[in-house]
Length: 163
Ligand code: FES
Ligand code: FES
Image (cartoon, rainbow, N blue to C red; front, side):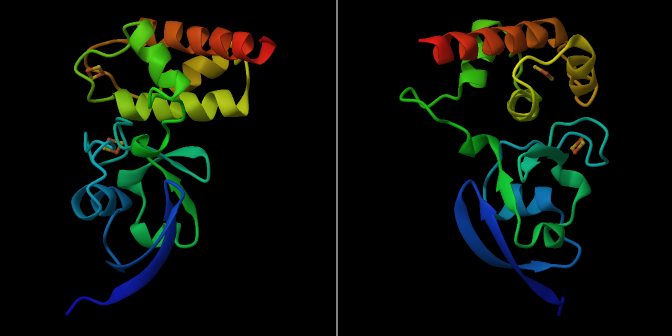
């Protein structure tokens, strides 16, 4: 019988206690057992960003972490970021407004990286934006629209703060 670890973790603001095998990745725990399928299994080798989630507010690749490594830490998935009356986060609205979604496979990861970016810097410069864009592979090539969505979200936040 596999040895199991007792994992305590907060996922989308809900505390969770669950037994996990030593070898289980965070991505498998989220997708296969917790049914949080917003994080996608693109390459499973840390090369595409489709599995991006936030660990204590910072983007990480869930395929490259063991579930056991997030003991007593805080996870946010795309299922946990909705924060307005329409059920959408402002960054999600910006992606829709700027057509930064095509097939949608990479979109949850891109959105979470954008949320973290804008929490880190209210108005990131082009160099910082390029660094974030490079951490995601989009087969549909929505990078230009993604950059527009970031600018839209920055302006949207400024207007919201000024009103
Ligand atoms: S599935 Fe994790 S980086 Fe590609
Ligand atoms: S929107 Fe299709 S892979 Fe990015």
